[in-house]
Length: 291
Image (cartoon, rainbow, N blue to C red):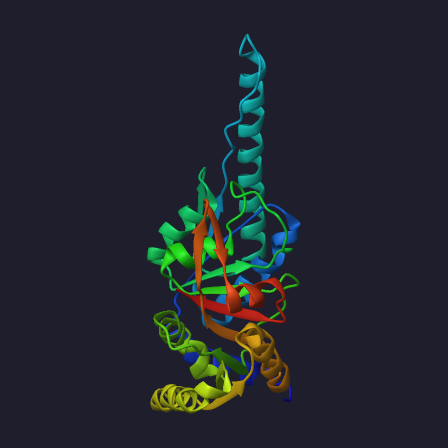
C-alpha cells in the first residue's frame, strides 16, 4: 500500500473527528513511556480533540521494622516526596509535548488504573501502552488489562516503540461474542476512516460455513456505515488465531487490529487470555480493545 501525503491522511482522519472529541491517557515521568504521549499528541492534533493528561501514582504502604517508629516515618516522607516530584515532572513533560493543543491536566495521588478508569466517564478514548512490556509497579503504572476491563471505554494500545497510527488498513478480529460487537461499534470512527477493513474469523474446518455467515453479516452492516470492508475466514487451530490475524495485517500493511478484550482477575492480578494476550505480548502495531 502506498504512503499517502499528509493532506490525504488528515482528510481521512477528519471523518473520525466528530466521534472522538476527547482522549485520555496516563502520563508518566519515565522517558520510556514517552511513545504513548507522542502517539496521543499526534492523534489529538489530527482529530482536533481535547487531550486529557492524568498524572497518577501513590506510594505503597510498607512495613518497616523499627521499635521507635523513626525510620518508618522518614521512609514514608521520602516516598511521598518522590511521588510529588514524579507528578510534577509528568506535568512538565505533558505541557511541553502537548503545546498548541487543547488540554486538561489532572494530578492524583492514587493507584493509576482504577483512577483513570473512573475518569474515562469524561472521555471517548483511552490511550495505553507505549512502554516496554515487562513487570511494572501497579502503584505507578496503569496496566492495560485493568484499563480495558474496568473502564467500559475503548482502549487504543500503542506498541512499545510508538510510531504514528496511519489506520489506512484495519483488521477486525471477529469472534461471535459481546466483546467483539462492542469493539466493532467502538472502533467505527477508525473503520470509517480506513481505506480497507478485513473482518477475520479463525476457526476449525467444521465451523467454516457458520463463520462465513457471521463475518458476511458484520461486513454488510459495516458497509451500511460507509466502511470499505470484506470478510475473511481462516481455517486454523484456535491457538494460532493471533498469528493468523497478524499475518493478515502484514499482508495488508495494516497497523491497527481491533479486538474484543477477554480477561479476568486472577488472585488480584488483571490478566488477558488467548488471542488478546498474544496481540499485546508480541505487538506489531496498534491494537484497539473493548470489553
